[in-house]
Each structure stands twice: as C-alpha cells, then as structure tokens.
Image (tube, rainbow, N blue to C red; front, top):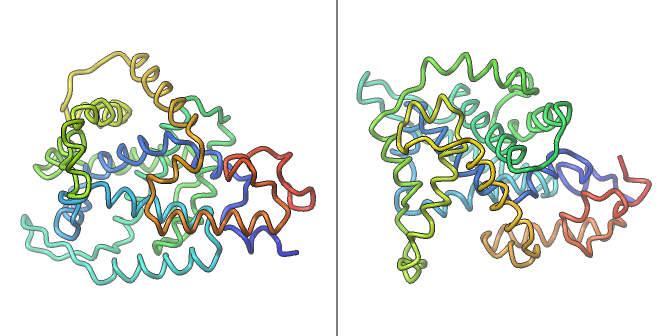
Length: 303
C-alpha cells in the first residue's frame, strides 16, 4: 500500500485540509485579491498581464484550481501545475510608468507578497467565521503552506511559517503599500464585478452579489480598510455574524453540489483524489470533507 504522501500533497489529518475544505475560502479568496492590490507593483502586474477585469470569476477559479491541486492533488499533479505557473510567471514583465523600469512577475518579493496575502486571508476568514483552530494549529497551517509556496518558486525558509512570523512580515511590508488608482478600481470592481459572458443571464440578480463583495471587504484588516476607505465602517460583531451565517450556509451544501462552482478540470482532479483515497482504504462516502474525521481514515495511515 502506498503511503499517503504518494496519494495527496497534503494529508487529510493536516490543518490545511480543515481550512481549504471550509467554504469560507470563497470570502478569503476575494479578500486576498483586495489585500494583494495594495502592493503597487503586484497590482500593476495583474493590471498589465491578466484578463481580470473581463473574467474575475475565471481568476478565482484558476486560483481555486491551483490551491486544490497543491492540497488534494497527487504529487505529480502539483509538480505539473507548479511548472506551468512558474513558466507563465517567468515570461511576464511589469512596466512601472513612474520609474520606467521593467520588473519580473516572478520576483521573489512579489511572489512572497501574493502568497502571504492569500494564506493569511484564508486563515483569518476561516477562524473568524467559526472554524475552531488553536494558536498552535494556526501556526501549523502556515508552516504547512510553506510547501505550497515552493510550487510558485519560493524557498520554504523564506516564507512565514507561524502567525508571529506572518505578523512581522506584514509589519515590515506595510510602509511600501498604498492605494493606487488601479487598486481602488479593483476593490470597487470586486464589490460590483462585470459578469462574464456565460453568466450575463444572471445580470438581474447582480445586486445580490454586493453583500458578498462587501463582506469580503469588511473582513480586511483594519489598517487595510482605513487605507481604502471604500465603504463606511460597521461594527465588527456585525461582520463576524454575517461571515458565520455565510459559512454555515455554504458548509451545509452537499459536496457534489458545491463542487459545481469549480471548473471541470478541478472537479476531475477532486474526483481522482477521492478515488485514490478510497483505493488506499479511506472512507470517502462523505466526500473529502468527511476525511477530517479520523474515524474515516485507515489506522495505518492515520496521524
């Protein structure tokens, strides 16, 4: 029988599984985009090299696919998407109109910013939404995410591996952050996005999206919201209550129903992961989320 490391990148007993299977990840994903936009050079990289404005949902789906593959995918799948992402980044450049300089998209400083904005958002939103993690477990999540960072080209030792290290990183980088015109436009867009062509029939229901976009905005750190000033402040307890309600509602959806949000390629990857785990003796009758219960894991592969 193969070891669990041959089946999935992160094992079912990891804290990563508990965070990444939580449906609050959708809020965390949009929050991370809003946070990333505060880095002027990173924002220019997105503005100049992506179709974000035309297809914001596509970018979220692609991010979800990457996160899924470096969590639930096989080592081969994770290595493959890592090579693909690194290859794309290596070919892209950022032109800074203020200085006239050209920068690489795969500059380690930019890669680190994006990684930290993402994983800190996933963790902060999940914990605030009600996922019960101790400080030690939160540290363990960030430590596990050092492995994910290697797939985009970072070195493990250069990536914050605890809450204290993550706090120190943000304290260090905050002086270089600012709200550019592109960042302000991005936050407005994320709260009121243009629907992609295949979803234009849903346009009449678009106003229902705004509460979700606003919820993502209100989960930003206090200092980030002060910088943006995009919406009037509301009590933190109200934000927490709304986030918990959102999380409970989405977590109640059956896994097959929820997975239709993902691209077909991501759904295929998740199905293959379930098949590999079932062949290794895991009880996948409750889906991947069910495997956070130790009773559904084979004793010889349990933590």
